[in-house]
Amino acid sequence: MREKVHVLDVPFDTVTLQQATEIAKGFLKEQKQHIICTPNPEIVMEAQKDEELMNIVKAADLVVPDGIGIVWASKYSEKKLTERVAGYDLVQKLLEEIENTEHTVYFFGGAPGVSLAAAKKMQQKYPNLKIVGGHNGYFDEKEEKHILNDIKKLSPSILLVGLGAPKQEKWIYHNIRLTNVKIAIGVGGSFDVMSGKTKRAPAIFCKLGLEWFYRLITQPTRLGRMMRLPKFVLAVLRNKKKK
Ligand code: UDP
Image (cartoon, rainbow, N blue to C red; front, top):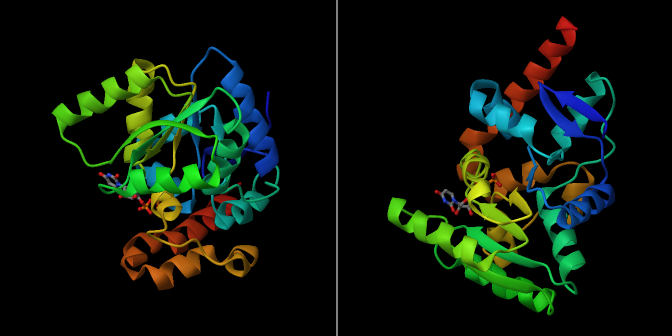
């Protein structure tokens, strides 16, 4: 059993990026299907009022803290999380790990053209990576069936789902059993970053724990969503008092 740390009820695995990568590699060897969640403070706040999302995160096989805010909040929990494990970094590590194996990956999500552009960029970065397919994340019911059939037919080992939270977590939860994938991960806006459409914060921002600030100044449309951050801090502090 892995050790868990609860932040506002969301159970995070106390793992480093390297450990998370090893665990995910282990998932690839098993018959069972696995879901990996990478909640940031916004998703933790969303889960406070969305019971379905909370239950999905609680049932996930690996939950990593995608945000320095989560690591900060863990100091009020039973045990402290060691480091931030960004979903983006975990996916990069996994792609690197499977590059020279028989394992395959499918890119599902993002605006039309983005998953394809992301796939092309990742193919350049990892020349032996087996990307078996992809589809954008804007679909109607009929198209959704077609996407599911595609995933079923191509049978990727890893399914990256970038539909934004909580849509991607719910999609994965309801559909993973209809596929043969070994691992499904909700990757948020990762295809935008992989494709070069949006840029990840420079290393110095990440090191100082200010990636959220970089995102805010470069994508001011996120302001509304980011207002959840102070609410997250307040909720954590309030919860600490209750204990
Ligand atoms: N997206 C999608 N289908 C939708 C809604 C969103 O494919 O119906 C994609 C969107 O194009 C973007 C990603 O989901 O690539 C969400 O990115 P965001 O940065 O908002 O996600 P976060 O990483 O913050 O969860």
